[in-house]
Length: 473
Image (cartoon, rainbow, N blue to C red; front, side):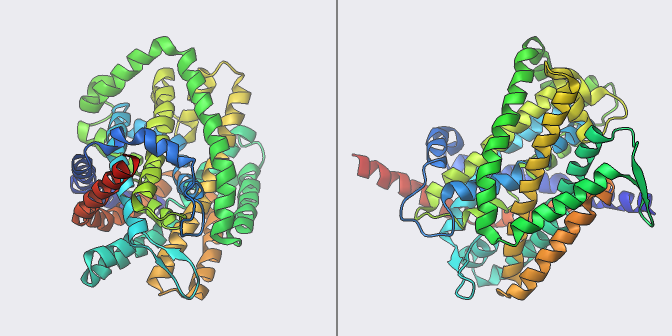
């Protein structure tokens, strides 16, 4: 039964993430890159400066930095550690190249999403929440006739949070990492009727995680932002340092690894020995996992950006785009290089987090136990904050769908906590495939809106920097 279900999911995933959607996302990023004059290159230093410098007197629920950390909490997660590994395992090292291409174009996309989120946001009179995101810039930017498209986005946003990227994939990644470290040989197991036999490490991890998530979610967006603002920067720095050490310790292998990645992007069989199919497969896996990781084009990050205390849409757009730069250009690149340098992607029998664990164990000048523990720690905290971030996203989507009915949102919150609890007992392949499907269905209405509103983005940007130049003159 599970096999047939997995096969059905794979067919749906292949259809959703076929060439049309990849072209839509990449073409959208390319269009915005051109219309904004390579803004992701020209204004990146300014964006990084404003990333940590909160605007004074802005309207919103949280600071710009807190909004960015909330968005990063949802993006820096299993996608960076497990997602990169699964992409390379399925599409070969060339998948990393396409992940980087998608990310470069995605920086312009993320900028546009952040700008539009603030420009078209509203304050809900019933709840006092500052609401914004694709559903509002679709409705207010494209007109009331397009409201149905905003509803479609919000529906799949709820599904993605509850059944995909927000819960199952993250919890599955956490439980797998904890089990691989504390009980790799299944020495301590228990049989659960109707589900199978599981390690006690998995069961204890799911219980602790569920309680932790529940305690934070009950506090709402401000508590989510507060936790994210502390955990995300701390764990990101540790992970980046570990990746940097691997690269430095294996610096002589880096040129060869880069050559393998580039060659694998255009001729995967020459690198994999025929194990991986075609360039389309490498592109598909790279783009899909890249979007899963940095969420550029997905439409999720602007939901957090809308809550930022700012008066300037362009300023928040610049802050938002740093998320994709940090998430993919830095963090995913380090993970991918570590996997290719150490040959972890070629080791038979490894799946998901085990691939990255192998890379860290063999790439770091540390005992395997220490490197495994550090990687597990990073994954646990990254995934934990992703769970929190996506609850915020999906709650806002549900709030839009129900017209601000908080009873429905509160009930959903408990369903979300339940999904966290049962997440470890889902199969790895089914979990990631389901997440890919929902991601793709969210991206379609959001990208349509970005195409339609690209002129608004270009004009807002031009006017802002012209005024800034006049002010400085």
